[in-house]
Image (cartoon, rainbow, N blue to C red; front, side, top):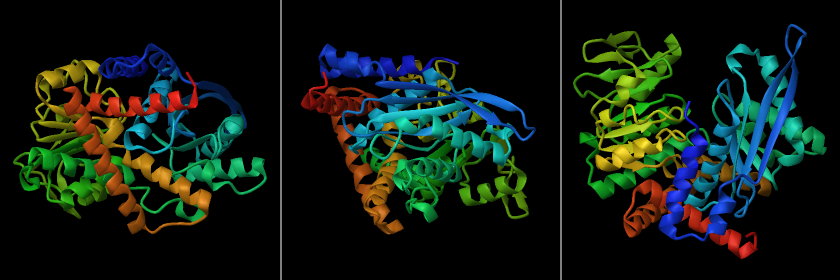
Length: 423
């Protein structure tokens, strides 16, 4: 796999040139502030002890506590976690919430662990990082293959060590123990608000706008659901095993597709409503084929490095809206720019998740909780404002939306560093 941290630093260098940023700021932003490597021994169900390797990277805390998710994945390594931590710092600054960036991970295939083993691993990881996380320092959250229940374990383990209840140590928790209304759908909802603002700029008619979503987990599902209800034509959806594609432009309801997935364990090759399946107008497709299918809006919502030099030339979308973290390589960015494909970057498009995580943290600190309507009423103006700030910066610098977002973010981070006398 290509090194995502190298890609992240290329984007930093480009944005720094556009901003004419002083070298001292660039040097400070080229490396994390802290890297924690931890060995995590876990007693397996067979009574044997296995040691797993974990990471936590903290990047640029000039604007506030570090913030970022934790992923359990067999391919997780330090370069990936460093890149994701940097992107989190940029993302938080792009939407103007007072956080630095962080990311954590454990190199493990969680599907090979039992429920009890996952709990022991999660709690051991929390103990290993206890001195480096907390509501005043670094606030983890769910990411790939982690979930609210795991955040409950983390919060509980941290609270036991602290000796009091500390709900603000993590976000993405269940509602019953301090989670926020609206958190589950926040990333997809935020991405939808960005799509709506872009549609105004491009004068897109939802009923004539064909949308393909690669990745049908929490983020992709909720984005597709909001887009479908607003009238956009959902013509392609996929999960890790493959997808479903409309052959004649007929839109599909993501709720029906999710029901089919839950029943069969994957997205079926036909479009099913209950027990009735339409195999004439819909067909099974691979993720690779889906990415190059003609559409108006292509939404990569799975993992990084999906759009590369190898397949970017075959992409036939007018817009690429990144809901995954780092799904497009710099080489693909160049190709999209040449093809005049508008790319809405991850640090803007998927920032709804961290924004509502920020809301959750604020509610935890105040011990005062908001309704779902109140959460949404606060989320939408942040996403709308951020989109327009990025759009205006891109126009001012005569650059792409990705570089527009990076310029907005890096300028804010550098200003905070300067005001604090950190460089």
